[in-house]
Image (cartoon, rainbow, N blue to C red; front, side, top):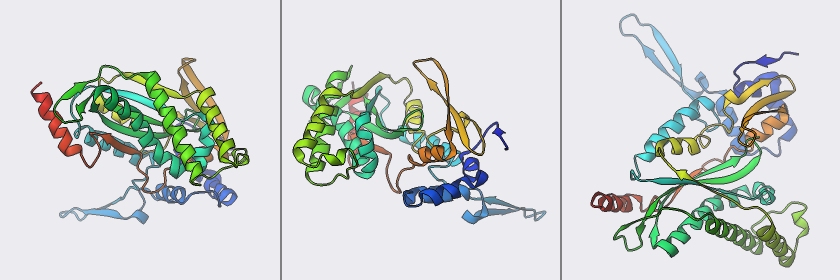
Amino acid sequence: MEICTGKYSIKQILLHNNNWENFKSQYSTLIRPAVHYNIDKIFNCKTESLGFHQYVCPTCKLSIKVPHTCKSRFCSSCGKIAVDNWAQKSISKFPDIKYRHIVFTLPEQLRSLCLLNRKLILNALFKLASNSITSWTIQEKNCIPGIISVLHTFGKTLNFNPHIHIIVSCGGLSTDHSKWIPISMFPEKVLKARWKYNIISFIRASFKNNSLLLANPIKLLKSYTTFNSFLNMLYQHYIWYVHIGRLLTSLFFTVQYVGRYTKRPVIAETRISSFDDTSVSFWFDDRNLHQKVFITLPVDEFIKRIIRHIPDKYFKQVRYFGIFANRVRTNLCNIVLNLLSYS
């Protein structure tokens, strides 16, 4: 048995020993179209099948072909460039002010429901997280902040763990647009309560209008009364995680950090320590243990975990709210810049 060590690519693992074709044969009915689309693209990345530019020296007639890249969000090499370009372009749109990083996480007990209803619930998480902040700032501060919202669907072990990273301005434009109102802190307990209420209310409403697909054992909760009891139990007795981060010293670094897995695979290939015909090993930094933790998975399980996080085609993993919302950003950011220049 050949054991490979060194630096590996996801493409290499998928192609090795016909891993991807074997996986497709076994799970053909469960693989989403977006997965096929992105993996086909990375297989053809930097090959002439995607087209090429041909450069010819006018003097010596030497000809060089440069194959096109795939620009897939699942491609490590293309994704790194895309993230850097997106981060640089993004920060140029927003005021040079203080920001804070806040993370809203979906409880573990709702993740399987989210996976089964990924389009419905993942789309909702953006609005529900942002509303948890803006409802408080409007009520308590009479202002609307700027929000950059980024979805991550993975945990350190590549498990399905959907959570929203929020980059929020430490201040907001007053509701009458007359002044900029600073915000020195965001209350964790208040935001957690609003996040919890928003999620449960959304799922309850989705159940009532028959928008939810249910799997066992939740499928057993057929009536609204029993399902509502289940939601009340989640509301009262399970952990709802909201993390209030520190003030950001570098908006570019933070945007680049939270956006890095929106345009490339959910695992950096430098974290893959080895693979062979049957398994893949990788590591992650455990902040509690303050050390690297190594995990070995069967090849099929590794593939299953990484493709689960490939977004559906046209799904936007970065969205903007408050005064950064696309339809009002230009006008309101100009007002903010004018107010700040005279403050």
